[in-house]
Image 1 (cartoon, rainbow, N blue to C red):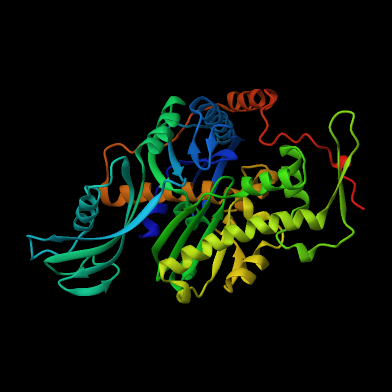
Image 2 (image 1 turned 90 degrees about the vertical axis):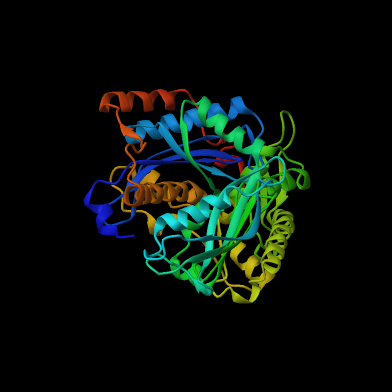
Length: 448
């Protein structure tokens, strides 16, 4: 895509909506003049109606989306009408398929319309009952029996074939997400598989070319996407995530769930051997009971056991994809779970592949609109999916603008006045809606 053509006009404002198991996050942004992503506003809310990536309570999810969208809209001075929504969950499946079309006009060269026709045909595949196609991703093309072509546009040929990576999901799960978005008074522009979005935010083109595994450790699920030669080869969703670790700590250390979450965030480690024997955390007891002492090393043993299980599932997906020996760039971990200390070392030790933590900051433009604290928070792997959904939405808008040129492109419109903007933001903050209910004060923890 010619970037100069997209930079001459002001980039459309787009919204990414990440409906996760632990948080609902709305990010408003556009492409800046230097081609990076400029975030205009961000809103987040606690997610009480989502379990393992799937909507389990419509009303609570609608409430969370409303809070997140209101905060993002107020901060960015934008009226949010259309959003790009992420989808995940154990119901996601992927399959390989081959399609072909025979072109009648042999004098003209292969155009974008021919490829779009081929992709459209794939959406008409007969799926098992209760399943629906979410994405059709072309891999290699074959033109008149000449295989291995990545981009056939401009070539001459009659018979155009392609291998496709098709991603499908449960119709009911998809409808529930769309229903939640519509009940909030919004329209979903596109449903995007969350690991695909995360890959846009944290992977470089060189890594995708060399061969890389993206592992997005969320609250309810761990998403896996494998790339090789710049093409997505395999996707999978593992039904374990950060919440599984919190539950293990709750049971293993016999503490309340909110304390287990705080222990994981503040003192958690994925490698028990990296912690000293004599490090003790003191957590407050229930009413009228004494404080409880927990060994940091024992805490790490509980976390390591669950993390090893998640990594083993990821390694199984890598082996079953057939690309185990072709991953020069190794593994990139992102998502909220990637913030766990010593996780990269555990992954390298378990799989034998190189590993790094994926941060979405390389695609972000320097921001003078957002408060410094918010901008720094955005560079956390927690927001990789939200920023990826934003990037995917912007790419689609630019694609439509260049190839389809529709009469009306639906985008978020700037509406709020300055007074209204700050008035709404103060109302939201005054309402006492907090993203994490931090019931424990720092002084409640005593480190020995």
